[in-house]
Length: 240
Image (cartoon, one colour):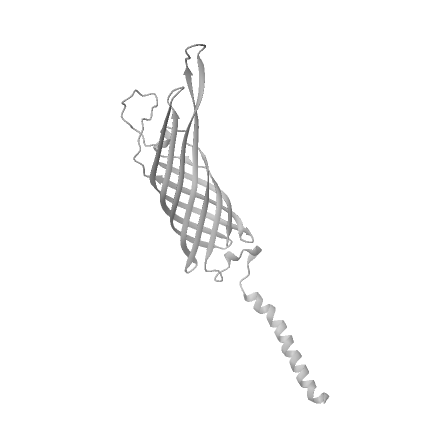
């Protein structure tokens, strides 16, 4: 009986041993996700969804800088979905929901009916809220993503400035906006990381004002405050 089962036993052990040795070799051939960043694995991931919350540092470069100091602050939420594989590239769409704010102080002399002359500090504010949607291209480069995109949408703009110690000028407009951006997505751990980028935003507005707030009534408007701006930005991003 031993002579009958010994060859079968040793044959089975040889098969199991060979399988145990082969499994690690096969596992090594499979794409591995470094630091758990599975979105970087190709071609296992054909689509990638990215969501980011960023801080913006907008700068006015158009006619708006003639009525407002150029540097501001802002924030945005970005959503990108890339699902069409073009070789090593991914094509999809992007959506932006953001806000930019610019502020400036003005000093006026106020002469009350009774009392001493007063120096009054007033604040001017220029704000843009933008919502846009458009195509996006994602290029995986080793451990990072290079992303290029363009979008069109709506800009809700508001400009408030004091024209005297007691009176303000307030203008609101709803205009089309076109936006282009180049950014670098950096997965760090388990598909979480950061994003840094640069965007250009052009607002097509027909709203015009007089650049000099002290100009006499009836002066012809000579400035379009809702115009071109650039946006360096950085923030947190997650990929799914």
